[in-house]
Picture 1 (cartoon, rainbow over the protein chains, first blue to last red):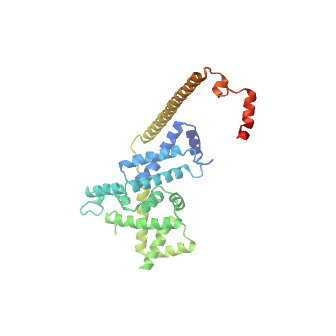
Picture 2: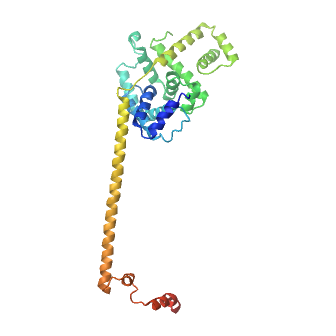
Picture 3: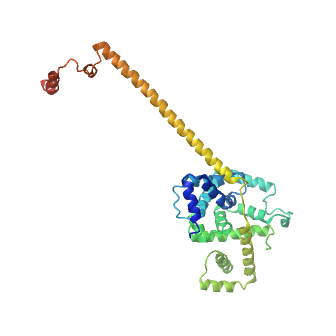
Length: 187
Length: 143
């Protein structure tokens, strides 16, 4: 039996107006959407709204969803596009936010005298991610956090495989550099 | 330097695509270099950290989505009702205006002709059928 058959069944039910079926879709894919949206935007207040928008957008396109792509991939595509739109829209605000965090010593990764070992490694990884250019961040989120294959990542982002591979390589080099500065890795 | 970079590129690529048998052999050779071996370990560790990274929305996320959908549906209903209401209100105004125009016309016909029979309303009360036929047939020729 197709492993996505259950998803398709839920979609079919949601199309007929079954609210419980749609709620089940939301619950099932909420963690994935949270990873994509928060991976892209950071743990900011807007992320919740963008996450909701992903499902609302999907609800309105229920009739257009033909099942060509797995529901997870379809929702990921919506999530990444809405996140990139949000980043464009809020670029200035987001940069101010990051600046404020840095001023507060939250993500100033090179701040001398801070004991990196005491800090949550996850927090460091999150802050390092935010330092990446959004093009690099999107491949890292999809490939390394969400675990999509390189081919799937290329399809979702509508990029050639070569571009994804080169972005992954450059992003990882940058991340490694940041983590070394943070003393998570030894140089 | 360039060679070292090439070795690193192959190492990074090995994590994200299938290497050809020749490339695999080459990478094995390259990994005898302790620096590159250390980089491989770091890369593995970093990818492990990223894999473990996850976020979640605040509690009640799915309820908030469903609530928003319900509100949207309600909003749509209200807009539809408003549109329907506007349509009926406009229709009523047009209907009242039309009735008023027809009434004025009928009154004026009645006042000028003293009757409201079909011929009067059509304006052919002064013509007999024969006159009307010859009028329609010959009027243009006589001019």
